[in-house]
Image 1 (cartoon, rainbow, N blue to C red):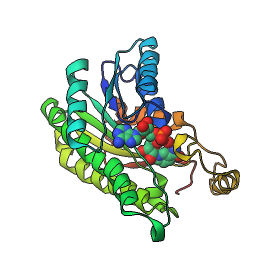
Image 2: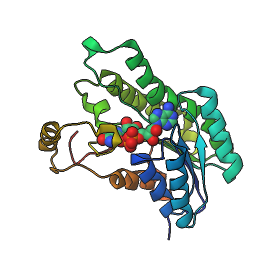
Image 3: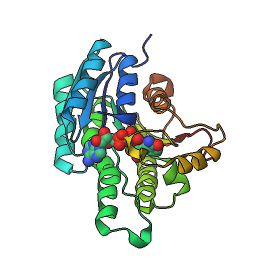
Image 4: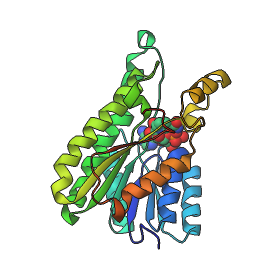
Length: 248
Ligand code: NAD
C-alpha cells in the first residue's frame, strides 16, 4: 500500500531537478501535491499533469520563497485548495559560487535569502496549521557543503549549515506537539544547479565518493518519502546524508 495515502505535501522549487523528483515520488506514494515554482510556469504545469496521471491531485503555486508574504500566501493556498497540509519539503535553493575574496554582497544576500530565510518563511507559515492538527512533517534539503564546506561556497555552505541548526532547534520546539523536522543532505546529484561543472572537476568529485558515482534525483526523493511516512514517526532532528558516503 502507498505509504502517504491521504496526505498532502507542499514541495518548494519543484518544477525541475530534485524538487520535481520529490514531488513525483510523494505522489507515487499516494500524496496530493502542491508544486511551487518561481519562474517556469510551463514546467510546473507539466509536473502537475504527471502527478494527475499517477491518480493524485496537484496544483502549482507561484511564489518566491525568500519573500515572507509570498511564502505565507503559498502555504495558505495549498491548504485552501487541497484541504489540509501534512508535509512541507523545503527544496528551493540557489548557488552563487565565488571565492570569498571576490564574493559580492548581493551574492551573499541572495543565497542566504532563498536558502535560509526561505525556510524560516515557509516553516513559520506551515507551523500554525501543523500545531492545530498536532501533526506535520518538515523536511529540509541541505547539502554536504553545509557539513563539509566547499571552496567557492561560503555563502551556500553557510545557508545549508544554518538550515541544520534551524531544523534541530525547530525539531525541539515542535517535538512535543507531534511534528517532526528532519534534514536530507544530498551529495553530488547532476541537475541544472551544477550543470556548469567541467569534466575534470566531475572526475575529481567522483574520486572522493566511496560509492564512486554520482547520485540520482530519485535517491533524494526516496529518503524524503521515508522521512514523510508514518514509519519515520520516531525520527526527528536528524541530518540524513544521501551522498554515496562522501561526507562520512
Ligand atoms: P535546481 O536548480 O534544478 O532546482 C532548484 C529549484 O529551486 C528550481 O526549481 C528553482 O526554480 C527553485 N528556486 C530557486 N529560487 C527560488 C525561490 N526564490 N523561490 C522558489 N523556488 C526557487 O537544483 P537542484 O539540484 O534540483 O537543487 C534542489 C535542492 O537540492 C537545492 O536546495 C540544492 O541546494 C540542493 N542540493 C542539490 C545538490 C545537487 O548536487 N544537485 C546537492 C546538494 C544539495
